[in-house]
Length: 229
Picture 1 (tube, rainbow, N blue to C red):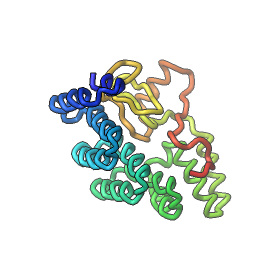
Picture 2: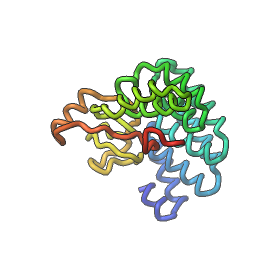
Picture 3: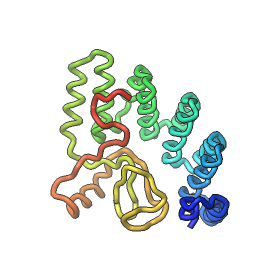
Picture 4: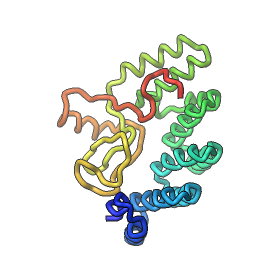
């Protein structure tokens, strides 16, 4: 109901429903994001970013970091989202998901050395993400390491496994290029996750049910292996 009211321009009523939803479920992400969108509509982008950062610190939901990245870049303050990612990674040093997204952010901001140093040290994505190899190929190109760039591109082009990128419903396994509070396939609320790793068991089962060969899902924001961000 809150989302419906917000889309109809009834922000005050939507705010009431979002707050009621949060009162019932402190982990209900769509309501938090809805409140943030209301603040943005009211011209309070910084306030929205501050609230989403507080909620991330409480929930640890990486989808909030995606929203914060766009907000702080819109504000022209990339240092703030870098700070948030770095702090999150320091709090959870074994979380390769956070490190990948921080490396991707460095890459997006043309911080080539920082992106290379971080992404080249990751072990998790190397055998699991086609787009990890695309980014590394681009970084090697910029460092004039042509042979290594070609090797990374070959790995990306030969990738056959399904990848949980960027959003996937944990209830029905539906994948979407955009986050939504409600899954368009099964109608479940608050079930999308953003984990850029292969889920081997569920991916294999889903592939057998829906298609003869598993497909690679491109990471949102990288159209070609060598595009300039």
